[in-house]
Image (tube, rainbow, N blue to C red):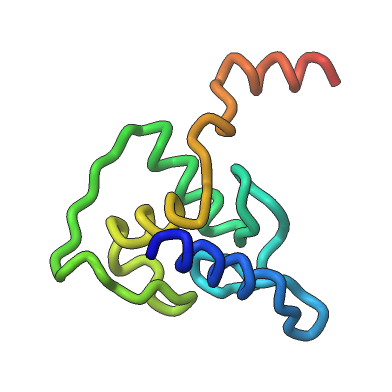
Length: 106
């Protein structure tokens, strides 16, 4: 079942709307691959902030909220779950030290 959801999300991301890719999490306009998944800037930032701060969320409903651009901020628990389902990886998030090294290298 999980594989089907991921395959469906990947298929949706590959569809083009006016020549643009869509975010696999919320179906907004995607800006590229972030943490191993095609996402928008909003979902990229949400995932990074959540993982770095080690936040834990709880769904007020039945853990099956539909995440879309207009309501993506209403259920953080289901949004995070969808991020993980589509393949976003916490291992891809750079630490503060890694960011500092990258800035100093350039």
